[in-house]
Image 1 (cartoon, helix red, strand yellow):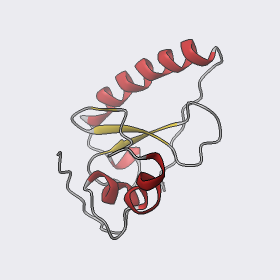
Image 2 (cartoon, one colour; image 1 turned 135 degrees about the vertical axis):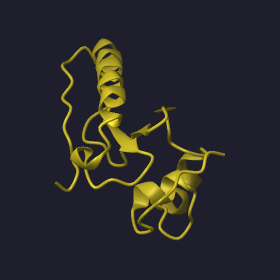
Image 3 (spheres, one colour; image 1 turned 120 degrees about the vertical axis):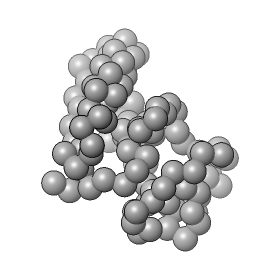
Image 4 (cartoon, one colour; image 1 turned 120 degrees about the horizontal axis):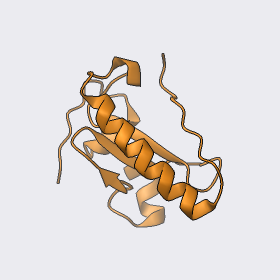
Length: 110
């Protein structure tokens, strides 16, 4: 099991990455339904890629930092190259799979 540090215990993503029960929406609501240990489909040193709960469209993915940051702009500079490569790779995968353009956007607080 990978243990990711959480700076804020009320963040449901941090709770999910750390398998914390109290604030973990995935463990409390979703795991019993889908019967999977986690919803991480790919991860790197700094990022985890997970399908969004209640996705708007098929293929809707979240790129979540393993450490808690309020937005991509708050991440250390070293995270950006890794994220750019992930976005480029998954944009290609999703475009090939769904045959439509892919939109990427930030939904952080800032």
